[in-house]
Image 1 (cartoon, one colour):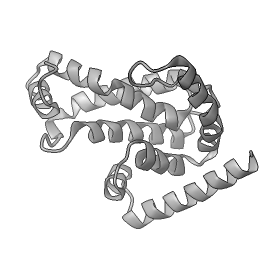
Image 2 (spheres, one colour):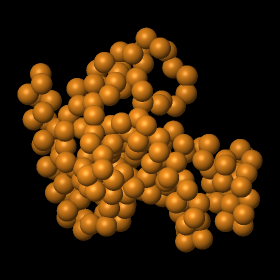
Image 3 (cartoon, one colour):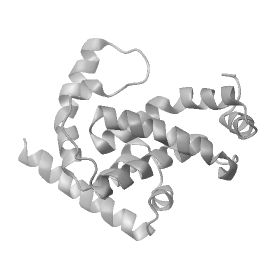
Image 4 (cartoon, helix red, strand yellow):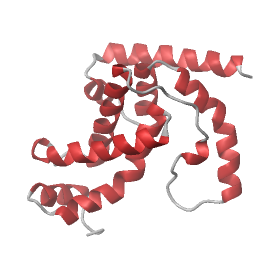
Length: 180
């Protein structure tokens, strides 16, 4: 099944092929976990919500437009779940080591450690942002979604997305400058 496109896998999964959906999960589990982890800042909760994102995606395959890419869609599902959790107050982000974040591929352990050390102030600054600001930063800079995609994912006007990004970047810069 690795040779099949996401579209073909989604269509097969829609018809009840569990193996096809399993392949989609395999392809996107790291990306979905990383979205959840960056937004929540807590590993166990990120794992739970990543799993919930796939459960919801499976239940909503009938409404998924197979002509659109699966990756951005499943990441939007995950981001929306995380935002709902953050806004409900059931989750308090905590500052955890970046070493817990899952990375794609096998890299040099020394380089990974160095990257984690350099990224730690950014992680702390991101976790200090309000949930909506954290979400737009995640979707724009880490998931590389367009402004229009972010607006659709978050159910807000395009002008709000731009405003949130501007304010979030300004807050991040202030935090990073303050922390040296």
